Amino acid sequence: VTPQVHIEKIPGVENGQDVAEDVLVVWCAKKEGAENRTVVVGWYKHAKVYRYYQEAIFGDGDEEFHQLYNVVAKAEDCVLLPPGERSRYTKWNVPRKKGSSGPAFGFSGSNVWFATEEKAKDYVKNMVDRINDYYDDNYMYKELG
Image 1 (cartoon, rainbow, N blue to C red):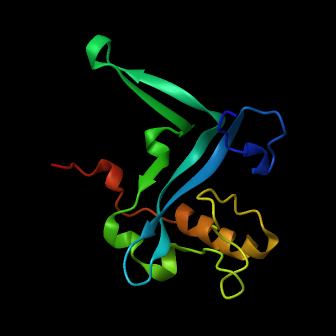
Image 2 (cartoon, one colour):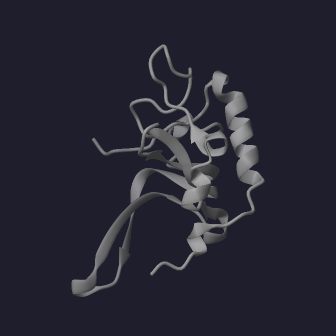
């Protein structure tokens, strides 16, 4: 079975479509430490999300490198939050379902969350507003090294 992203869970995408367009993709990661929580690390606005992995080939001959991907966006539509910014708990924390003691929405066993639950509606609206209002540092443009 070929692995796939179930893009039909994205509002407006039909069964059988192979690509969803103009999607806000929010990238999250576990923040290690005492809290062991999940935070937003960045996002792609106006992204294309592919059901099946696509392959990009870089270089040629002995220097050839293959990279699989399933999300793509223009660089100007991408933000990578600086590490200090992502640590702002009240601003970028992402819920994880934890049985009866945790929230009724959020990431569970899978690391893909479509955030379509009715109970998540206010959380999602507030997060989208924060993303749309963010004009601070973008680590994508930080020179490393």
